Length: 80
Image 1: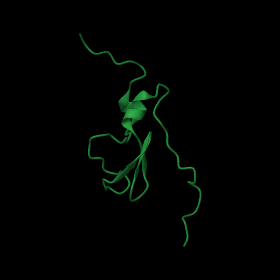
Image 2 (image 1 turned 30 degrees about the vertical axis):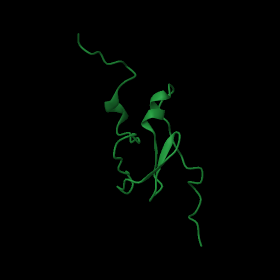
Image 3 (image 1 turned 135 degrees about the horizontal axis):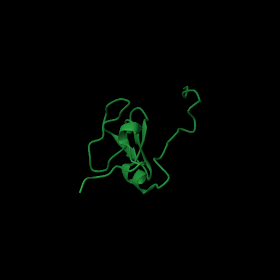
């Protein structure tokens, strides 16, 4: 029996989607390092603060993938 693609599942139209996968080596798409601070729904690179959604958290969402935006994205860097 051939596999029939549904209209909602088209990975070739979605493009690249980076997620943090538990029990795997995850290289940061920002800096390439592998140290992460893992939370309940996202993981943050310990060096450059790039945030990725957890693959497990994205699978539980029925409304679509989790989009993570930093709340201070327009703020300037801290100055000492």
